[in-house]
Length: 303
View (cartoon, rainbow, N blue to C red):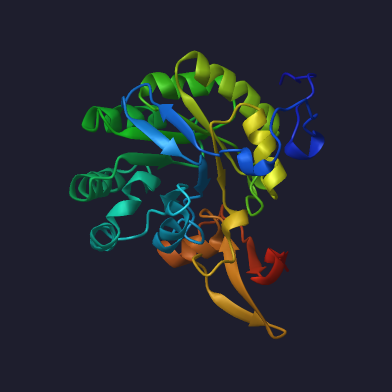
């Protein structure tokens, strides 16, 4: 083992120091960005904030709401192909602000091909828990060969070396973050992770040198954290917990002490495994929060 003595920072460890500005009001600020991508040669313009591809946040209903503000939604991978076709037929305006999520299995690949070909989706989000697995880079190469002009997001990683490898394998945008999410237990169960702000700084430097982009994925609990992520070099910010508990969110609606809450859980949790696999593997842990967002004041409360 080698111990790194250099200080690594999370969002809570820093604040943004103010500087002189010519702006008179926050109303003069535009949140829109315009990006072009290394491999796909596509361009995209919008607000670079993404609802995470969890079934409690990455829903079609969320996409309809966020697309009105030119924000993206990474749709969770448990919708059927027919459900995709129906949604896109009824909401073609969402195509610029939607990504289809996929894993690394052959079934995932076949389903993704069918969705992209039938719905004309322009962005794929390749998402696995361990972006350091050798087969993940192989999956990116396979998807890039199949879709040379599709924009590919891929992750998650937290270091510059693997950021470079995934970009060279064919990814346009790298998802950065292992363990910072509010319902993620990776750091507790596996002891693996990296403070999110430092991870974004290091991965952004590596990606930008190759013409790639990065997404800061996880760890944001308020808008200020998103500002810090962008300040660290992120091109996009992906969030789960901040989008949970809305009427557009997934998750079972429950009532506790007269108040309504919605479930919010990780996609490798026991809750998700029971729902989609039908069983819980011995390595899975249970972590489920209840989120309640009140309309008045937008106060976020959880148990």
